Image (cartoon, rainbow, N blue to C red):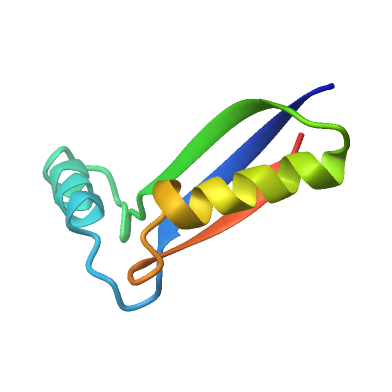
Length: 80
C-alpha cells in the first residue's frame, strides 16, 4: 500500500540559524516588525509499506540516516 509521510526537520535549540537570521534582518530592513525567523524543512515522502506503522518506521530510518543531522537537528515524522 502507498502512504504519504511528512518529516519536519528543524534546528535544535541553541544551534545557529544563519538563514533565519538573514531573513529576519532583511524583513526588518523592509519595515516588517518580525522579531525572529526559524527555518524548517518539510519533506513529503510517498512510500510503499504494508501498514502505517511500517511506513513510519521506514521514514524514521531514512530521517536518521539522511534527512536530518542528529547533532544539530531534530525531526518529527507524521503519516498523513
